[in-house]
Image 1 (tube, rainbow, N blue to C red):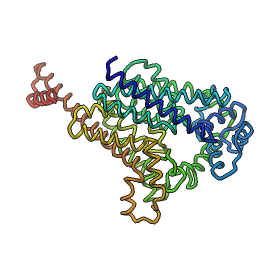
Image 2: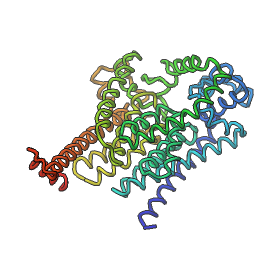
Image 3: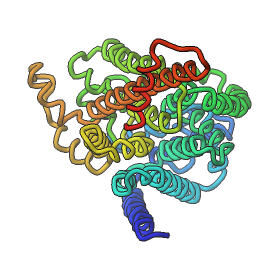
Length: 468
């Protein structure tokens, strides 16, 4: 191992150790423990005991009967609601059930280790992939991600597991190494958090036959897991669809913890919501309008990418560039919190490749990526939320709201800028590649004795690409 490699491994290990120790301290000091993991753990236990986890009173009673703390204040009542208002995918039960068979103290320790190991493995792989172009930039971004996992480790949200599965699967598929594991990992991630892994699956599906094959394999494996899970959940909870919809509506209402509107509970803690609705709701408070505008903006950007991805013959570098566009876009499209943003690790290879070119594009890639990762990290988010919690958006004018946005909603704005930046770069490189392939075909026609009027122009284009 060379000295830079040893230094990189050391920095990554130290970053992980800091997050792990800090996360454990937060978890131990909180009377509620790993609150996010408690929800899926007791939900799975409830299902294993023939109890309906999507029925709030049933899950709440089950939790209280098995060691849960009854609410003694408004804060405790809200924490109890996090556990008992089950909104996770029914397929989550299949993967949490083995842990639900263990006692709570052992289950949470195993889950914490799985999250920590997955995150460091993901960061190391993205550092290894990015250091080909820039050792220091890749290491900086990977360490920044690992240093900001305290709340994720303390809360035990399934995002820690899903993000690692997405990153590992992308690396395996793009590197054509341990592909079976990569396909399985992506299938599991899609079943647990489809709103995180689904767009990444789309990235493979629309990017040429080689990657579409892996996407279809992923879909087949997901279906194999999904069918028995659906039968199991439907047997115990025959009305789970309507109950889940009711829970989602309740938790996303104005007073709900997942509401993107200003002054909601979801915007007043360090692990805040980062989707584009949090920006638009400041100007249009009606959920129908800010949701529709979000889908319009993100959908238009996604369709532009799809149109070009289908026509292009994607290479591995093209896929990393596509992922750098899709990852921030999916964080904007629908409900996401800071803990989901660890999936930004997938943008490191594309960023370092652009940075290695230097010039304006390289500096822009480094600046936008760095600011986006900073704004979606837990430590900076803690300070930003504390500084902006008391901002009075309701009484502010349009001009004042716009002026406050870069501070109060820096994460979604930077994610949008990042998505647009990488889309522009992708379209530019795709157009250049198409021009190169057209020029190659023109010269082939000349070599076969079929003169073409653009042969001279084609030769010039090839020379230009070669020099580039």
